[in-house]
Image (cartoon, rainbow, N blue to C red; front, side):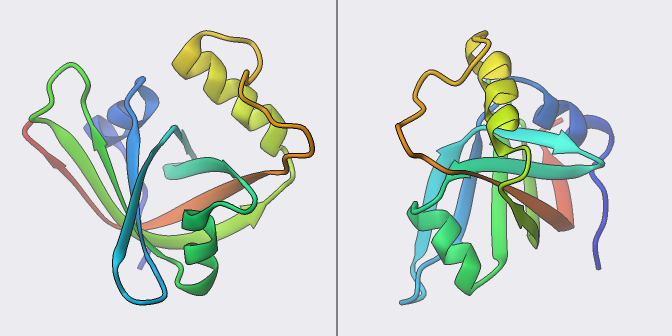
Length: 133
């Protein structure tokens, strides 16, 4: 059952905190990477480039755990367990630019590669917990 993220969890997602995204590889081992994160309609929103490992893992198995640690107080963090709700290219270039503004204070994403296709992944949270408040 899906839930929405509100209160302190939403604050941690809106702040300039990185998310660690954990997915499952085909052999069952965990693959975890730090990424930028956004919050839209109470759901975590991620942005990546096609061809990377973690979005391929989510194609096969849509389960994901996202941990967002408060950069100002590393003992406080948000844990979200959920599933992929949507994958889309629509608006992905504009979205990565908005994340570049949030994290780098740049108007456009400076690490864009020629021919790169951006991808937005929206997550339906099933379990949400804030620890260390």
